[in-house]
Image (cartoon, rainbow, N blue to C red):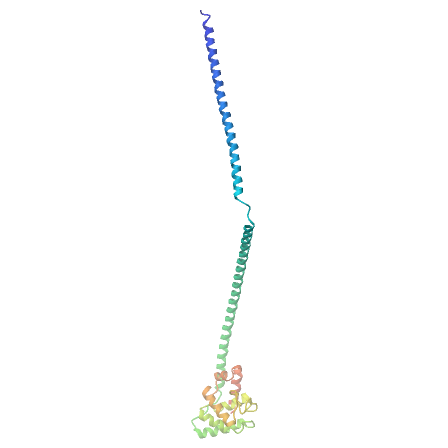
Length: 269
C-alpha cells in the first residue's frame, strides 16, 4: 500500500504538465493566426490605399492641364510690364534727383548773385556819397549870383561876362540872350553857356541845328530860340544850378566827368 501512492502522484503531475503544455500551444497558435490575419488585412489595406492615391494623383493631373500658349503670353506680358515699371520708376527717381541737383545749383547761383548785387549796391552808395561830398566841396568854390541888383544891372553884367566867355565860338554875341533867359527863368546865368561847352564845344559840334547842349532829339531854327528853350528846360527839369544829382540826370553814363567839366567852365564865366 505504501509503495503505490508515489506512483499515483507522479502520474497526476505529468497529466497536469501535459495539459498546461497543450493549452500554451493552443494560445500561441491562436495568437499567431490572429497576427497573420491582421498582417494580411494590413497588406490588403496598404495595397488598396496605394491604388487609391495613384488614382487621385492621376485625376488631379488630368484636371490640371498644361499652361496654354495664351496663359504663357500673358505671363510674359506681365513680366515685361513689371520690368518696364521698375525701369520707369528708376528713371523717375533719377529725373527727380537731377531736378533737385539743378534746383540746388540755381539756388546757390541766385544767392551768390544776390550777394554780389548787394555788395555792388553798397559800393555804389559809398561812391555816390563820396561824389556828393566832393561835389559839395567843388560847388563851394563857385561864387554866388547876385540877384538883388535888379533886372537891368543883372542882364548888363552877365551879358558882358558871357560874351567874353563865348568869344570866337559859334555862340559868340549871344551873351544878352543867355542873361535875359536866366533872369526870366530864375536860373544861374552861367549854367547853359557852360553846358554848351561840355556838349558841343560852344556850338562847334552840334548833332542837330542850333542844338549846342545835346538836348532832346531835334534842333531849332536860331540860337535865340534854342537858348530860350534850353534855359527854360533847365529851370523846369533840373533846378536853379548845377548839382551832382543834376549831372547824373543830364548825363547818366558819365556823370562825374560831366559834372566836373561843366562846373569848371561855370567858374570861368
